[in-house]
Length: 503
Image: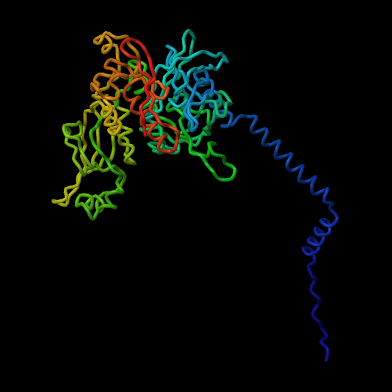
């Protein structure tokens, strides 16, 4: 039986489906060329919009102008240093040509660079930013800190503006200037990666570097490191090199090191004033904080430090009797936490910070002290007045060896000594006492002045010991060095080379 009123058919909605099919059909008929045109037009619009925004000025314009201003302020004080001389090699003394960088310290013509840039040079020339080249004399150098002072005459100069390296912090933007790979008067930018760095460099005894990631390469040595206002806060000195693929030995690998201005000014002002650097002396020996954990089973104080002390510092292992530290109350087992407000992050930082001070300076110390018997600990603050660092410190073996040969007493030669002995003044080391009948008594009589070691000039007793020590190190590494050759000026003015057998 059929229904007499059948249900009417509902209309079906094909609109969306047809739209999808239509779009798909259009895509099928759009050529790849048309797609590229659409993409090109869209990119053109984006370029135009971005260009209009840039034309109105952005923070990048301000940064560009600021960087240019840093260059304008700094570049007139930057110099290129070229040297020629003779240096020691495995085959003996050989001629060399070398270049580096420097910067103008004051209006009197003093130029600061690294000691290793000019060390041993027979000729030094300085090129200014205007392209002119001038002969330079070496006023003095401090081998232990790798700082040297040159001087040029009769030139109108633009001295650098000096900043405060103690205010430098991790993350600060800095600029390195110099002549990397002889690309003269170059500039690179980066940030401070860290401060108070110790790199373990062979020829620098006192390290307290500013670490930066600004590109520093061979030839940058001696150039200024500046802050964002163009003030010199350090001097480019060394780089950490990479040896992997794409990074050659001696090329920039992301870590540059600079001597801080606080150390530079202390050394340079003394070299200009007297030609010799008097460094502070504390009178302690220190060890890394890790020693407490390594030797906790041997000493109750070290065990207490290992258990209780948290942080960085250096453990005092001995205190010189009647030295500055002893007089101020410093004890064995104390942990030096900070010196003059700078955190002590390694054992090596203690002598570096002390050497940057002068004798007589009053230096604040922060200490951590263990009371083992009472089971307590305390934080102390002491102010210590420093003595002068004796030149013989760290060179006791050399001193004993020279005395066995008859050279019993040496001192830096100065005009007072020359006047008292009635001899001409010559920069060098004065021989004050020689054993009669000793191997060197005839060749190096009392009143002689040692002016060179291995043809390298010595300006003071510290230079003499340092150069002698380096010769012994080179000999130990296989260098063909049989004699330590001293260039000696006798009291009558005659000069001769005196060989001292090393084997």
